[in-house]
Image (cartoon, rainbow, N blue to C red; front, side, top):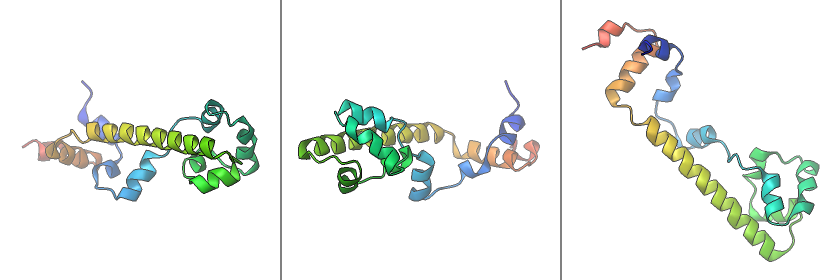
Length: 131
């Protein structure tokens, strides 16, 4: 088994502090799903060049609203736009659930374990926390 001090030395002490909702969303990032693949799946291949034309990267794509998708990506068919937006929301919800599960697994450390890791990460003495 690896020494806890080695693990703690490679651990960011910021992971043990409480974070705001904005910090959590920033840490979670955006879905890994490729926007080009999504557009292809829904028959919006003509919109793929618009991503580059408007300099829309993956992170920005997942923040677009319905009006922006319609205007910037030139998705003018109402039904197609609705299906695309529904699929985007499904993918974002799946990503959110995945990130919540990962956070839940991280939170399975007890409060005492977190305290010990915090002391070790800050270079504290392991004997001082052995009690």
